Image 1 (cartoon, rainbow, N blue to C red):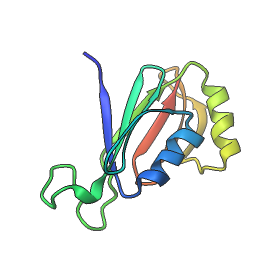
Image 2 (image 1 turned 45 degrees about the vertical axis):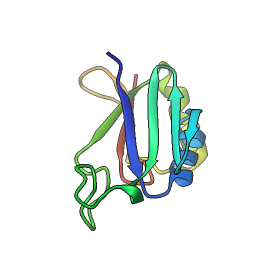
Image 3 (image 1 turned 180 degrees about the horizontal axis):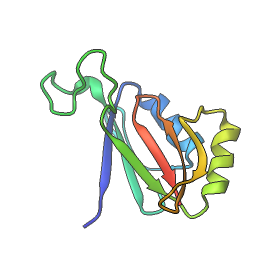
Length: 122
């Protein structure tokens, strides 16, 4: 089994720039209607336009609620220090600094343009 994550976003080009420029994903495929599939190592992430979803779709956020409410996306990387330096150099704000956690992992956290909460860990 492989996990592929699809995020519905308000502005695909804005989210694409974040995942490529800030987190180092590469475009794997593009489809019609502002759909793009990204990868970084074994991680596969697709971005799709939320606008086309029906109002009653299960992943549709209620008005005023961030799209990522209640979701934490954890991405494990080989060199957390290098990624942290790269994210900081991009100017993207961190939600939590790089630190060693009691469970013996180092991580930092940030929020993507649509409110999805990301934990980057080693």
